[in-house]
Image 1: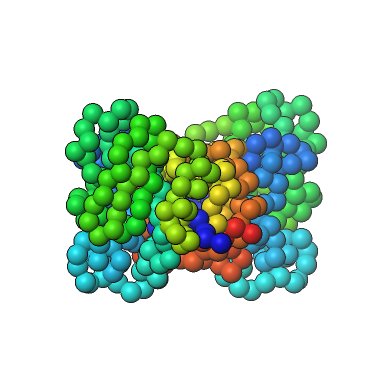
Image 2 (image 1 turned 90 degrees about the vertical axis):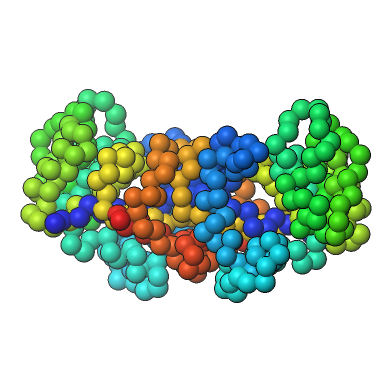
Length: 215
Length: 215
């Protein structure tokens, strides 16, 4: 059975997966790059997304590189796709990633405002779907052709799939910063650990990688 | 210069240091023992507090055992001392720990309702002080005779000393449970990590020990 997976999802020590005040210029709001820079930007996986071939091979990379293996489709919230809200006034927007996004699979974008399928280079296609988590997952599974489905974020999207008990595996990077405000992953998830086996391992970069495996 | 230290302070992955609904029967509220049992109860340090001589010697004990070394006094909030609120109606209450508490030093109890010094066995004396953090620290330092001062909790007390920038070293045990409600250590502490060097190390028990050392 194909699995539903979360990867490379960073939260602050107080539980925020993104800061307050997201905009075109600051997609993570006041968190800026502080959730990803300490552990992700130096990895070979991230460097390769930027077209480079350098980067680290340590524990941060060991987790980061699991992101793509066996994945047949991603589901993301509309806010991860772009900064626009409400009806699409500008269908010129093709996502933050340009003509050749790093996904290379179908991507289901959750939105109340559907628009036509967007086909980009390298196998990435964006499908705009107005659906609850279980229904969106059925669409993504069909598109994934038997492979796994990644829940790509943002925070609200991951939380909705956790609340619906649809996540099989989740990798978190817990970053020792106190963001204080933004979107909190744990809001409304009291006691969720009872459904998972949790492992933690610390990295020399200062973050702690947690893996949540559905029991 | 004597240091101000926090030890063996456990927080959930969503930042709560105690649960909701504290009472005589449930001093940690709905968190019950879930913040301490996974890593602390099995240590030799905790077992010794109960009068035993068994217990683990691994990483959890390595951190737990630092609790007493070099400490000359503790400061605790009144809620750690006992469940009563408001004026003391019952001075028979001598704390949760009985006639021979594990502190073996002077203990400053922060309260708006002073009462006489309480001398117990083994060197523990409780001093009831109505003072802000800096002033209470001056009292504790005097009592500590040049040794370090431990901030013993609860959550609000630790947070107040952090807000006043009076903490030199803090050891946290981050427990992978989502408590959802209670007292949150991080409330009002946005950006506090900039004042500290933070290390993290994971334990086979599943918790992550963090040390916050004032830069």
